[in-house]
Amino acid sequence: MFNDAPFILSALASRLHTDPNGLGSFWTSLALDGQARAYQEIVGALVQRGFTLAQIQAWDEGASFERDMALYYALNASDRADLAGASLNRFKQLAGVAVFIGGVFTEPGLVAPGQVMTGRIGRGTEFGPRGAFYEPRDCRFRDILDP
Image 1 (tube, rainbow, N blue to C red):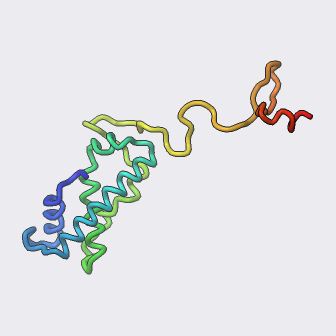
Image 2: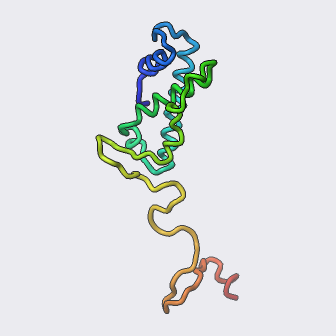
Image 3: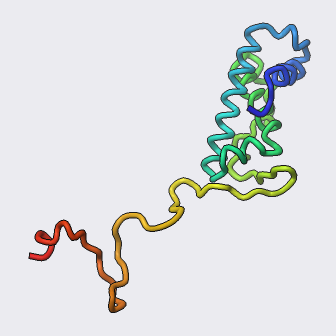
Protein backbone atom coordinates (compact mmCIF):
# COMPACT_ATOMS: atom_id res chain seq x y z
CA MET A 1 0.00 0.00 0.00
CA PHE A 2 1.07 3.56 -0.58
CA ASN A 3 0.12 4.99 2.82
CA ASP A 4 0.41 3.69 6.35
CA ALA A 5 -2.68 3.23 8.51
CA PRO A 6 -2.11 6.27 10.79
CA PHE A 7 -2.00 8.55 7.75
CA ILE A 8 -5.33 7.25 6.44
CA LEU A 9 -6.88 7.54 9.91
CA SER A 10 -5.56 11.09 10.25
CA ALA A 11 -7.02 12.05 6.86
CA LEU A 12 -10.39 10.55 7.85
CA ALA A 13 -10.35 12.34 11.20
CA SER A 14 -9.65 15.60 9.37
CA ARG A 15 -12.70 15.04 7.13
CA LEU A 16 -14.83 14.29 10.19
CA HIS A 17 -13.40 17.29 12.12
CA THR A 18 -12.35 15.10 15.03
CA ASP A 19 -9.25 13.84 16.81
CA PRO A 20 -7.59 10.79 15.13
CA ASN A 21 -7.27 9.11 18.55
CA GLY A 22 -11.01 9.37 19.11
CA LEU A 23 -12.17 7.68 15.93
CA GLY A 24 -13.00 4.37 17.55
CA SER A 25 -13.08 0.89 16.10
CA PHE A 26 -16.02 1.60 13.75
CA TRP A 27 -14.19 4.31 11.81
CA THR A 28 -10.83 2.55 12.04
CA SER A 29 -12.32 -0.56 10.49
CA LEU A 30 -14.01 1.40 7.69
CA ALA A 31 -10.83 3.37 6.96
CA LEU A 32 -8.58 0.32 6.79
CA ASP A 33 -11.08 -1.64 4.70
CA GLY A 34 -11.38 1.36 2.39
CA GLN A 35 -7.61 1.57 2.09
CA ALA A 36 -7.31 -2.09 1.14
CA ARG A 37 -10.10 -1.76 -1.43
CA ALA A 38 -8.58 1.42 -2.85
CA TYR A 39 -5.16 -0.19 -3.26
CA GLN A 40 -6.66 -3.21 -5.02
CA GLU A 41 -8.69 -0.93 -7.28
CA ILE A 42 -5.56 1.04 -8.23
CA VAL A 43 -3.47 -2.05 -8.88
CA GLY A 44 -6.24 -3.72 -10.87
CA ALA A 45 -6.84 -0.69 -13.08
CA LEU A 46 -3.18 0.00 -13.78
CA VAL A 47 -2.27 -3.65 -14.39
CA GLN A 48 -5.08 -3.78 -16.97
CA ARG A 49 -3.38 -0.84 -18.67
CA GLY A 50 -0.09 -2.77 -18.77
CA PHE A 51 1.85 -1.34 -15.82
CA THR A 52 3.98 -3.67 -13.71
CA LEU A 53 3.50 -3.92 -9.96
CA ALA A 54 6.91 -2.28 -9.45
CA GLN A 55 5.84 0.68 -11.60
CA ILE A 56 2.54 0.98 -9.74
CA GLN A 57 4.23 0.94 -6.34
CA ALA A 58 6.65 3.67 -7.46
CA TRP A 59 3.89 5.85 -8.96
CA ASP A 60 4.18 9.47 -7.75
CA GLU A 61 0.41 9.95 -7.38
CA GLY A 62 -0.29 6.55 -5.83
CA ALA A 63 -0.51 7.86 -2.27
CA SER A 64 -2.96 10.65 -3.10
CA PHE A 65 -5.18 8.35 -5.17
CA GLU A 66 -5.18 5.73 -2.41
CA ARG A 67 -5.97 8.32 0.29
CA ASP A 68 -8.87 9.85 -1.63
CA MET A 69 -10.34 6.51 -2.66
CA ALA A 70 -9.99 5.06 0.86
CA LEU A 71 -11.83 8.03 2.32
CA TYR A 72 -14.49 7.74 -0.38
CA TYR A 73 -15.07 4.08 0.50
CA ALA A 74 -15.09 4.71 4.25
CA LEU A 75 -17.46 7.67 4.16
CA ASN A 76 -19.87 6.00 1.74
CA ALA A 77 -19.97 2.88 3.89
CA SER A 78 -21.08 4.99 6.86
CA ASP A 79 -23.84 7.47 7.53
CA ARG A 80 -21.49 10.33 6.50
CA ALA A 81 -21.63 9.90 2.72
CA ASP A 82 -22.35 13.62 2.53
CA LEU A 83 -18.64 14.22 3.28
CA ALA A 84 -17.50 12.04 0.38
CA GLY A 85 -17.44 14.72 -2.28
CA ALA A 86 -16.78 14.26 -5.97
CA SER A 87 -13.11 15.13 -5.45
CA LEU A 88 -12.60 11.84 -3.58
CA ASN A 89 -14.15 9.75 -6.35
CA ARG A 90 -11.11 9.13 -8.53
CA PHE A 91 -12.03 5.73 -9.96
CA LYS A 92 -12.71 6.93 -13.51
CA GLN A 93 -9.42 8.83 -13.58
CA LEU A 94 -7.51 5.54 -13.30
CA ALA A 95 -8.52 4.61 -16.84
CA GLY A 96 -6.41 7.36 -18.38
CA VAL A 97 -4.24 9.00 -15.74
CA ALA A 98 -0.65 9.70 -16.76
CA VAL A 99 1.79 7.73 -14.64
CA PHE A 100 4.90 9.58 -13.48
CA ILE A 101 7.68 7.94 -11.50
CA GLY A 102 10.18 10.34 -10.01
CA GLY A 103 8.69 13.10 -12.14
CA VAL A 104 9.28 11.19 -15.38
CA PHE A 105 6.39 10.06 -17.58
CA THR A 106 6.33 6.26 -17.65
CA GLU A 107 4.95 3.97 -20.34
CA PRO A 108 3.43 0.63 -19.33
CA GLY A 109 6.03 -2.07 -18.77
CA LEU A 110 3.75 -4.90 -19.84
CA VAL A 111 1.67 -5.49 -22.90
CA ALA A 112 -1.97 -4.88 -22.07
CA PRO A 113 -4.06 -8.03 -21.50
CA GLY A 114 -5.37 -9.54 -24.71
CA GLN A 115 -2.40 -8.49 -26.82
CA VAL A 116 0.38 -10.71 -28.14
CA MET A 117 3.84 -9.96 -26.80
CA THR A 118 5.88 -11.93 -29.36
CA GLY A 119 5.31 -14.58 -31.92
CA ARG A 120 2.20 -16.05 -33.41
CA ILE A 121 -0.71 -17.69 -31.67
CA GLY A 122 -2.92 -20.35 -33.22
CA ARG A 123 -3.44 -21.29 -36.82
CA GLY A 124 -4.22 -18.98 -39.65
CA THR A 125 -3.31 -18.28 -43.20
CA GLU A 126 0.33 -17.86 -44.09
CA PHE A 127 2.40 -17.29 -47.19
CA GLY A 128 3.36 -20.50 -48.90
CA PRO A 129 6.63 -21.23 -50.71
CA ARG A 130 5.33 -19.65 -53.94
CA GLY A 131 3.90 -16.55 -52.26
CA ALA A 132 0.33 -17.81 -52.24
CA PHE A 133 -1.80 -18.01 -49.12
CA TYR A 134 -2.42 -21.41 -47.64
CA GLU A 135 -3.72 -22.75 -44.34
CA PRO A 136 -1.09 -24.73 -42.46
CA ARG A 137 -2.04 -28.30 -41.67
CA ASP A 138 -0.97 -30.43 -38.78
CA CYS A 139 1.05 -33.34 -40.17
CA ARG A 140 -0.37 -35.67 -37.51
CA PHE A 141 -3.69 -35.60 -39.37
CA ARG A 142 -2.26 -36.06 -42.87
CA ASP A 143 -4.30 -39.21 -43.54
CA ILE A 144 -7.52 -37.44 -42.59
CA LEU A 145 -6.84 -34.22 -44.44
CA ASP A 146 -5.15 -35.64 -47.55
CA PRO A 147 -6.70 -39.02 -48.39
